[in-house]
Structures are given as structure tokens and as C-alpha cells.
Length: 72
Image (cartoon, rainbow, N blue to C red; front, side):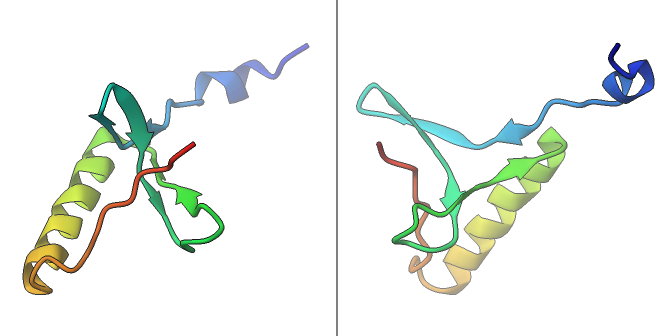
């Protein structure tokens, strides 16, 4: 029998996606050749803050920070 208290505390995870060329791509971070790691967040606000920080970093670096979607 499942543990009821554990299932009650389970929350959905948030991921960052984009739609390009009729395809959904997910944001991954990390090693370029391994495919990276899926960026998953516990709250929508965390995902929004991550995107905001990514944009601020990109501006400071003159646009050299890239967002990479998972392909495949």
C-alpha cells in the first residue's frame, strides 16, 4: 500500500521549453557533448528567476551566453 503522507507532499516539477519549427525543445544545461542535464525547478517562480538571471548574464557578456535546447 502506498505511503499516503509521501504522495500528498509530491509537487510537480517545472521545466523550460520553447517552440521552434513546430518542435518543442527543452532547456538543458551542462556538458555540450553529453546532452547536458534537464533544468527542473520546484516552483514556477524559480524557473522565471533562472531565465531572468540567464538574460542578465547574457547582457553583461555582450550576448555570448547561449540557451541550448535538447535536440533529438
